[in-house]
Amino acid sequence: MTQQKKYFDNLEQFLNSSLQSHQVLHIIQSFNKITTEDVSDLGSALANCTNLFNLTLQLNDNQIGVKGASSLASALAKCANLSNLTLDLRYSQIGAIGASGLVSTLANCANLSNLKFSLCGNKIGNQGASQLSCALAKCNNISNLKLIVSKNNIGTIGLSNLGSALAKCSNLSNLTLDLSKNDINDEGASELGSAFANCNNLLTLILCLRENIIGDQCALGLGSALANCTNLSNLILDLSDSQIGVIGQSGLGSALANCTNLTSLALYLAGNKIGDEGISNLGQSLVNCNNLLNLELYLSFNQIGDQGVSSLGFALARCTNLTNLTLQISYSQIGDNGASILGSALENCTNLSHLTLDLSENQIGVIGASDLGFALVNFAKLSNLELDLLDNNIGTVGVLGLGSTLSNCTNLTNLTLYLSRNNINESQQLKVKSKCLKSKRLVVSLVNFY
Image (tube, rainbow, N blue to C red; front, side):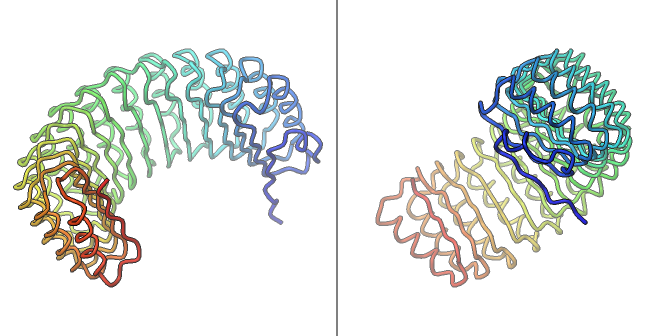
């Protein structure tokens, strides 16, 4: 008989419950609900839950500290049957010492197959990251791992040790690793990347390195590693707000060309130095990903113009299996020509049902908006469209033309338009909304001019 999951958001109720009867347990004590003494009581009670195999502890945003972390560590060491463990200790002031004591107990949980561990904002540093690495290296049965260690002053040494540990987790099939806002440079990121080359069974990888000190060398290193992960079907890579240029992007793109089993890909590369050449190379690499169904590209703040977006469009035109596409290329230098070619090229993606296109803060005028509208009419399977053209040069004529053509998208059920800051007066705004609403199948419609 399946054990019913027990939820407790009142610590006293849990302490007075039948502890040995719990097999699946979820305790929520977030946001200053517990003191260090409470954590000690919680730890003592958990130590008596000897039949636990599934445990979730949400204790984020408390003043748990080193002492509280030690109490939890002692308790978890006695939960030897755990196969699923979720620990949320974000912003809990446990530091490197607290983290070291806590993670050392993971080695006692020999049956762990699923681990979610969030230590964001605890200043664990290289010492804590290294201890975490030692513990993970002993968890041979883990197949699903999620580590959130952003904002922790982790540098090259800590990241290198973490990479070495992950390389030993040969059974990993799903990995999420958030290392954003640390002190990571190219050397550390490259060593982490080399670890992925040994994770041959990886099916899903989510890696966030945004807002670190990384550039082309990091992208090249990650690219070389990812090229060996040939079984990957889902990849989310966040390298936003870094210093990656054409060289790094080319290396990363070449690696993606080898990941031919990818069905879902999300690349966050906003705030780099990719430019037209880099975006063209990225497009060419995606052509080899024949199985792609879901694609998200976040490329804002990269000095991309008509040439780059046109090349990307021509490449995406060959990704004919795409059903869901998100393109964010705001704050760039795209004009009428680029918008027209992009729209025309995407017409070849005949299976698209969901399209999100963010071209805000560009230089698109009447012609570009009209051509984009005419192209969208030919998307026969398109049911969901979100189009952001905020702060361009479309004007009244362009917006009215766009509204007229979109009314002919007969399969649209959901439409969202952002058209503010395009020099359109209130009476013309009402006309555009009226035209869009003529589409008979529309269930949800939002036309925003503000």
